[in-house]
Length: 490
Image (cartoon, rainbow, N blue to C red; front, side):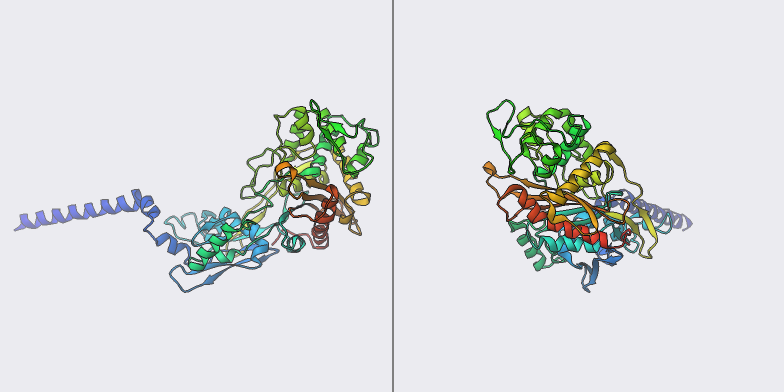
């Protein structure tokens, strides 16, 4: 009898070992495959089983979480959703996440290991309460940019030159991310409608669309020419013909303004003479032009804010005629509004380009800081002496040139208008550009740099549209920043 009991006990022990081995196999070695299985709803239910952390602007949340009482319990909500959509993106139970909702998903969803109060917390996939993301945005600047576009196609980007903080980021037309939050039939209809819309409201024009920058690129060309010693005196004649025959061709380049022949750089910049800057680009050479453009941030495919930014491009494999056109912001030259704000910021910041960023810090639900932005990398786009001269030139544009609509009482403002031709045979309505910076009379340094592009500008003439359509929007954004108290957004 004892022998039978011993055999039964041994058999039970084998069964127990087999169970333990199988449990270990499933829970340790095969767990990833189960987690990724489309039939496993546990992770999804867990993800939406608690409120998501918030994205903050000026210390106040622009996102929230709504308790639906359903299986996937919490849905994302947005305050002023269309205004902040290019920053927040959406968090959808059906279609995933974009922009900050995607780049900071670990913090917002509570899965980031840094949210754990103890090193071993969360090791089993447990979620901490969602943390918050504190942005660098200024509410007043964001509102001014959004209201300034007033539904017209276009975008606005504003940067603090000395730090790289993004103060405003607006794209229009926009959409309400709340329409995509849940998983019902209305969400599916909204997704289909947004994707069919020819105006592409989900396209983030501020950072994900590149445009020919037109005459605003003349800031870069002037910097390259001054750094290369092609021009040494702003008030000396430039020996520029009008019209200018593009090298190696019979094509003549003309100007919108009168009296551009042989004018000094100061007047050529003030009245945006195409012929002068095309010739300056050719004299500087493709190597010098490309080097300066890249120092400003062109041809950088790795820029993140923290989500990715479309690459702004300056073609370095061009002939002299193509270089002439590239130097006035046409041909293959393309830039995002954020890139052109970086150009204006470099002028305002003594020639230094600070990497732009949107997240000041992340915090636990308790408010304790998890991570901060830290110091940002810098590049020297031009010599400090060149930056001083360009500040003069840009201030002249606003004081008595094509950018007078950007003038602000009690402040020093520099700017550059631009009109970018596009479409087959340049048949499209020109894009209206304005880039600028501003410093209050009591400020030691410029507080804001802005780039505005309006796709459906109303003006007939080249440079006037930049001054008439885009400059007033830039002025409103700059005024909002100069009038608002400084802060880190939280």
